[in-house]
Amino acid sequence: MLVGHSYGGLVIGGVTEKVPERIRRLVYLDAYIPQDNKSAFDIIPGLETIYKERALKEQGRDWLVASYKPEEFGMTNPDDIYWMNSRLSPMPWHTHDQPLGRPELLPTINSIKGTISDLSPCMLELRLLALYFLVKCCKQTVQT
Image 1 (tube, rainbow, N blue to C red):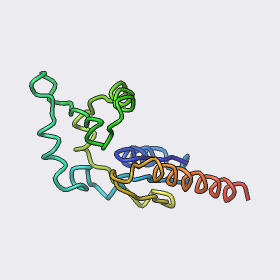
Image 2 (image 1 turned 180 degrees about the horizontal axis):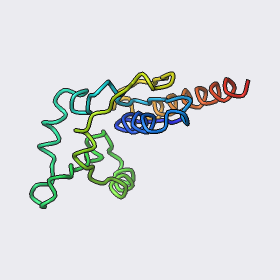
Image 3 (image 1 turned 180 degrees about the vertical axis):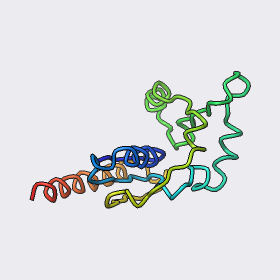
Image 4 (image 1 turned 90 degrees about the horizontal axis):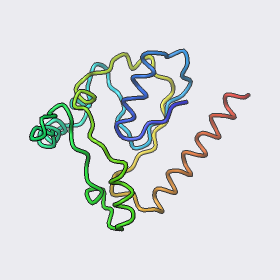
């Protein structure tokens, strides 16, 4: 089982393209779900424009896109902002412009959806609890 969150949905879809025999189930947690021969820029209208604006051209690294700031995720606690800043890093541009294909190879898809504004501790706990039960259910299905 692979679990992908946000852009990670395309990552787990790409892994499944390469080794479908090793993947029994995919879980998309607020994630992009791959579509046949489409890139992230194709799936999310306007994303390419945002990435062009966030490209690190001034630093001579236009192949990288600046991470969103913690405040853009709604964070206000200084400790949380410090913690996030220590872990955020730029993302390569080409991760979003390269299409994936062959979605017919994808195993059963489970999707837990929400929006970035749902990231209150309560909503996050509820989604993690839902994911826990989904994983537990999948284990029971695989073991029987």
